[in-house]
Structures are given as C-alpha cells and as structure tokens.
Image 1 (cartoon, rainbow, N blue to C red):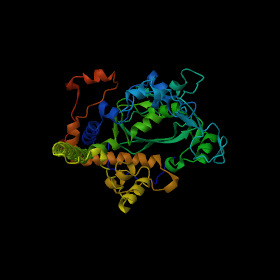
Image 2 (tube, rainbow, N blue to C red; image 1 turned 180 degrees about the vertical axis):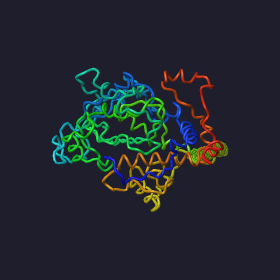
Image 3 (cartoon, rainbow, N blue to C red; image 1 turned 60 degrees about the vertical axis):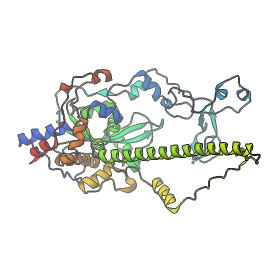
Image 4 (cartoon, rainbow, N blue to C red; image 1 turned 180 degrees about the horizontal axis):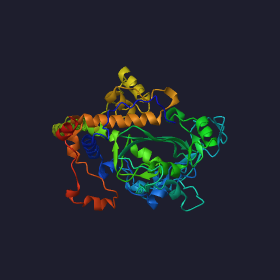
Length: 458
C-alpha cells in the first residue's frame, strides 16, 4: 500500500559518510528510553502473567474487562461503623439489590435492542449483582491471543536484513469482543526512508468495525485484500514480517509506540517515542503548572485555616458574651436558633458554558502532543487531514521519523531535560524490576549532551 505521494523531508545521513553516520546513530541511541520511562508511559517490558490474563477476560454480562473489577475492595471514606455492621438496624432493612453489572441481554437490530425495544444508546435494561468472567473453551485461550513476545535474534537468510533503525505505525480496528485488532502495519527504514513493510492485516478475531475514520482502512479494502491474498493473515505473521528487518538492538521509532507494539503482541525495549520526546520537552512547562496548582492549593488551605480560626474565635467570643448576658439576666440567643443563610447558587457564565462546549468538541488526536500537532508545529506540514477517510500509516510513520530527526537537529530543545532524566542504554533483556533497580550505575550512559550533539551536526 506504499504511495509515492508521501514526502521524505528529513535530510538523514547516508552510509557513504561513515563518520557522520556513526555519530548520528550514537545520538539516536542516546534518545532511547530506559525501562522506568517505558513503564511510566505504559509500555510492556516483560511477558504477561497469569494475573494479567485473568484481567483480560471479559465479563459475561456487560463485556467489560475483568481487570476493572479484580482490584482489592476499599470501603469508601467517611463510612460509619453502623453502615459497615451487618447486625445494625439499617442493614436489616429490606433494600432493592444493587446491580453492579448492567447490560442489555438482547442484541441490536436496526439500532434497536431486541430485549427492551429501546434505541441502542439507551441505558441497560437488565443486570446482575456482580460481574462474572465469561467462559473460555480453552484454559490458555486468553494467553494465546494476548501474550506478547520478545524480539528474537535475527537469523540471516533470504529477504532478511537487520536495520539499524526503523519507524513503524499500525492501524487498529475493533473486534466483536471489544479488543483492538491489528488491521494494517507499516514500517520504513529510518535512515533511508525505504518502505520495508506496508500491508493490510486480516485479523485473527472477528471484526466489529475497522474504525475507518481513524484507521483509514475500509471493509472493502480488507475483503479485497483477503480475497486476492494480498494481505498478511493474522498478528503472528505480521510480527514475523516486521522481524525480518528488526533485531533486539534495532532502534524502533514510533509515536505512542506502546499501542503499536501491543497490537503486534511484541515486546521491544530499544525504542524512541516521539510522544515521549514531546512530553520531555514540555517538562518545564508541566512542572511550572504543577507548582502553580500546588501553590493555589496551599493558598486555599491557608484561607480555610484562617476562616476556621476566625470562626472558632467568634464562637468563643459569642459563648463568653452569652455567659456574661446570662449572668446579667439578659435574654440569651442560642446559636442553634439562628437560621443559616443558604449560599447563593452561582449563575453559569457565558464563558464557562463555551469552555465546556469547547472541551466536548475537542477532536481525537488534536492534543498538544498528538502526532498531527507535533508534525504541524515542528515540521510545518499537515497530516491526517483527510476528514472521515482516516489516517495513513505510511504518512504517520514518515512523520514520526521526521519529528525524531527534528529533535536530533534541534538538541537545545531537549538537552537539559534529557540530562536530568539520565536516559540509559537498554539491554536485550530485562530480568525483573528489583534487579533493574540494583544495577550498577556504570552500566548506565548519560545521553549525548546538547553541546556534543551540536558539534556532531556542525
């Protein structure tokens, strides 16, 4: 599905200039994120466990992931002992059972539920007291579907070439179970821009919808590719196609790359994520906002403390005055006799209403760190502007590569923040979080500083 219409704007080093080529790769390697950063950003750095698979099961009623309901139960704050005591009078009162699992037992036909004849957007008409995991015919069914696999050492052979760096982007549809399913994978050589893989993927699970307005993939394209055998069949084969060009040391570049890796059921630790680079760039701004919020919270705390102190002083003075009046035989006004005034309900302003509307109308992928925004701000070009026709994974992969290149050629933007984070060189395997924490600091390498990067690119 490659197209010549996409621009490869980045002026990347050629293999003929060996010194610059090595220096550029060294700088790119310096941007590789350490395991702690990957975990913080939602990356999977270890194979999934049995408890993970239990959480990936779906509720037999509402079809939600069971992980949401397997967390340890915590009593809500400010619950009295009477409410918790089963022998209390209140608990003995007959109450209507609470339905924690709510759903429609029927199926939607022509946008109407068969169970209650209500529109598909209506609230659930039925439910169960608790969530119950659906039955799966095979014990290892969830593991087989969702387990992720480490990048293997590449065995050289026909159509196999280890790239030093690649950029990747995937498009996902939604299966009937509600899970994301890989339906297109695109990978380019980071240095040359050559398209290595660009193919539709016929999913393993039955698809509910290809999410065309985001993925850019239509039902017609999927069925045509399947019928003509021009697509990749299944996630495993898609992963193998990618592995033809990638080894454990290959630097994989992407935007929100953890989503792409998860869709491929793939664990790779040598990654550079343009989203994370943008997140690092915004660290000073983010810290300033957080400091402002903390200052405002402290200010409000002091105001409340002062008000409480003044209230106590007023109550004390009123009590002393009451005792004095009583001693003098004057009528005493009890505080309980006073009718408290209700605070006025603030009238919503036009500005507040417009702000709420603007929040609702904010489109997907339009945030400050979205690929679309970063490409426009950093590169001055527009992508993902085909309205409801969706994204193009080739266009997105090229944009991601160009953004990372922009950060490399503008080192002052990230220099200080990267040095603060002390980004480490990742290793082929990570054994356990505890072992990672006790690794010797000599195994860590500080990213190439701003001055060094500038000298490399002069």
